[in-house]
Image (cartoon, rainbow, N blue to C red):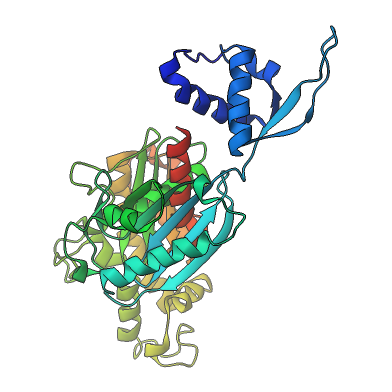
Length: 404
């Protein structure tokens, strides 16, 4: 039996505990609920009346009478439409936002284009406009919105709701109090959460994706940049200076010529970025003019999907390029495994489209250079959540805080 204290000061805690049981139980009667918790039926009825009034719980019908007869008991069910959460993600070129029900099902979404290094006041207006768009439906009761979480690219301070620095928006300066700015513009007393987008992305894998049954997870988003979200023992890790997850600036080639956006040489991000791959494609054009990567086009018209597709068809140039990238990924991921010892490494972003050749050979590379036990214990997988991982993770994080 679940122990729930009865002190008056813990009324809210009792309510939350009961709501969480209902959330996971399907349909249940007060009599059955009383078998799981140490609260009286009278107290449980008060809690049920509280939640049926505010819409979090609905009555679905009547149960069977007891052997002694009497009134048939009400059957209660958690109402997934009894509240809402809003998740947003700011990337280099767009603001993507969703509103979900209490089970993280997306009810509506909006994507807004952002300009390169767009002025903060302009971006803030788009955030508020997106919020108003998602809550425009009269059937959505604004008083039932449980919160808004927004993931920002760059270094963020979760406890302060602060964007310390965003490489995509240098004009924002340093130490931008994003949570405070949003809270001033949104009507009502709605909780606002700000964190690095990668932490919401790994959270989405834990709650909705491939890591539901895992306690230790790393999710890597790779593309032009490289960043990771880390969960250890079911807790998102951030670090003393909010730097956990900034794996892109780990040095993997100290003698290399590649200069990273941070100014360092041989950073993990610089070695595996799609920008580097496409630059190498252009450099190799005269050597491999018949490569199917080019498909009769000039080197400037190639995109990364051409390279991925050609590698899975055995094209010589594509295999050469992908083997180089796999080598650097193998070194970086092996180091991450030694640092965090995750049960699963999930690859998100554009590299999820790289296909079979990349993933199979990456696994082989990691197994060759890692400790002997890694092959058995650390899974390497492509995410299945697509480009909604960040916003779904943000909305789901709002709900986790609400129900905790």
